[in-house]
Length: 285
Ligand code: FVH
Image (cartoon, rainbow, N blue to C red; front, side, top):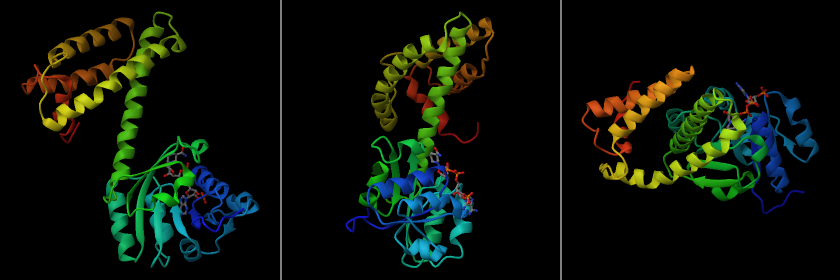
């Protein structure tokens, strides 16, 4: 049942994620319009009470226009022929901060309000508090709460994409480190399920360090309160040697050592680990 107090929304793009977005709005009583390049994907949503937009102009004018396509090229392909004057666009397609800022300018020139966003969840979590929806640009937060936990990051349209990228680097960094540890332990017959709780404990412990390390970075001061970078570098040599000795891949520990060696060469060997930010902010690899 639609609820007149709920903002009308349109979902443009009914892929795996778009389907979940539309279902969440329908579940929460929003008058929901849907559009997809392949109309057949809308059939079950129409059966649940969604309205199928006949044109793109109809779709973007039927309500808050939430776009969830493969990439920004698809977004521009889709919207280029549309009359966007007065439309409110919420683009939840993955992309870069440059694409977000460029699209915001492009939309404003066409008379549209533009919000850029990133979905930090997979489709099954949409509609639950675990689905973190990051937004940047014009505020529309209260109209999107049907999707999950909405976090508006500020007026810079590029912020949601940057946080998304920052989330991905954390995810893959943790997973790759865990996989390296799992490979080490497997050489001694310790299976992944046995090592995983230990790895989780370590990950939680390191996560506790982040606020203090962030303060060191923001203050540009890295007193070695726990250990100096040179101590870490020696342990990295040990990790490389161990990985070689047991016959597993050494690329990840060697990458750790590459960053540390550069910082030590720059004179930071006696400082705390976060001083490595000096290497991460340099372009190149
Ligand atoms: N699925 C996930 O778990 C992740 C979670 C994090 C955020 N991503 C991003 O969400 C965007 C959509 O992802 P998706 O999983 O829904 O992707 P698909 O199932 O492949 O659906 C793609 C839709 O895009 C439509 N489309 C593609 N190109 C065009 C175009 N040129 N013009 C119009 N529509 C286009 C496609 O239409 P169709 O093939 O059904 O006709 C789908 O509706 C994505 O940015 C993820 O990174 C999801």
